Image 1: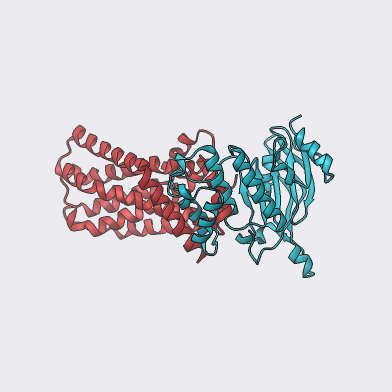
Image 2 (image 1 turned 45 degrees about the vertical axis):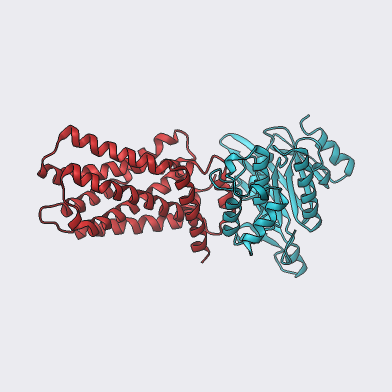
Length: 246
Length: 224
């Protein structure tokens, strides 16, 4: 699913803090995701998962701390700074983001939505890429229908297709299986597995265990904006994800 | 090139969604029509009064209608968090503003041109002989309203009491545009029509200054 020019990129959170007035949404967040790693975020509602994902997508500016993107290409070429600063990241390596909201226009058709974002991202062969993704997400037959006529699950499929349009090096997913039926979850798990295996870095927030959580090779648990657990051990990863809401 | 292609794609989206829903155009046209008709019937102005007060009334109606039109400009990007998707997709955030202000200017111009014959008939003012000059002042005035309004719409969409905030910020800021546009229109509807270049110059300067400010600082208005 990735293009020949694909550059694996990681994410480094350095003492990230985020405050909304007097409320600390994130505190002393410090960890690094290696390029190609698949990390699951777990935690109760309000623990800071969405804020962390929005900071990683550069939609929200942290109150303090630094967000950087270590690049394998930079390290391999011996570049002095193998860390790409946020503002030097081009459109091509920007993250694909699936949020709670679908982030697509109700008054446009599925195809028009994807074509719009493909053009904004300057995706090569935008029309062909959109057709391919519409087939993959199972919406090709409904490509000319307005998104407002879609069910929640179908909208989620459009949202996922939008996030994958530009073959992102980093994929950020906020409860991506929301609204999907079992077939949809299975398709998403297979798509994410392919992406992970080709070096795409994945950070996703999940509730409970599912086919998608099985892809995670690392789990981080947040509680009240703090990291309280971080493990790569298989059994512990499953344990954190299984009891995420405990 | 990136700014141009992004703006073109976004402008296409703005026009397509509006012509499908017709929310903004319908509201604006009906509002201006009501104001113009109600004032005409309430005051029954004479020929001379129409020339003196008609332009002010017309521009006030345009301004209030614009504040209605500009309200949902960024608000409807929040329904499905599409603004975040746009911010992630465009390399130059100014493209988001640029497309919206072009679309808003076109919508405003469309309603103004639609209302002009009705205004001319109800207020008995000849407009055909000064039509090109009127269109020029409509364009410059509408552009000023759209530039400032689009910027303030982005600010107010993220605030509490957003429905009240936009008119409260917009109307005082646009008073100079209202005054200049009205003065130029009064001159054009005079018995001996003339183009007041001072007013036109002011509108051009206002548009350039606000457009430059939006280009420089617009990105910060989009942040959460």
